[in-house]
Image 1 (spheres, rainbow, N blue to C red):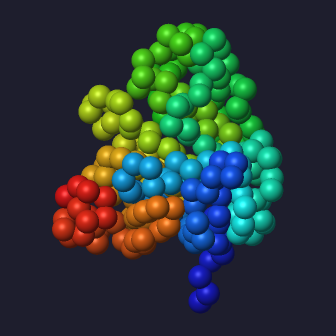
Image 2 (image 1 turned 120 degrees about the vertical axis):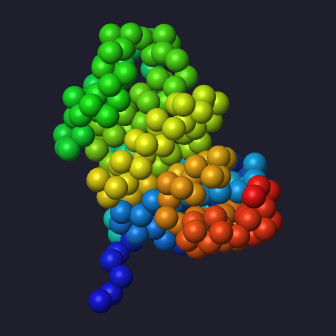
Length: 236
């Protein structure tokens, strides 16, 4: 039986910011329902990879295929409407709006309603009438994830979702991501510096270096080979 069509595919992607090239001839294929961890040292292009998929960089060459369509010239809002969800590193919630209104602005018809997001994050239900500015860092990250979900994406991109959070909050959010993977078969791309957490969550790992993919294999291969892990990302 032939492999299913990829949910997301990058072919020879060359992209960056203005004339500055960050990604060079990058190829990546992600199947439906896969959870892929994107790892690497600081400055290798991980966040630029997600920004390029969402349309926030300058694509100079190559193709970004989503559900079989080349979206490389689409504006970000069109990509979101087509089914790409993004949890940016800076969270980018609306600080002056309430939790409820942050979700209402992003909500689109589908499986993920605001009520269902509140079931996933009960703390947000408790804080529904609070402004985004009044939330803790962990609550803001919950809101950023919930906001992406109520847009009902088929592919969810997460950029450093655990950055700056207390261990107990990291554990809580990791459980949520594991739940999304197990119970909803959502396609996810996770950029994360906490390598141990990322490898536990994703069945596949991609390591980047200088704008290229230098490793693409199972997470287990890195988890069972600390020398390789250290050589690629400096930990292990």
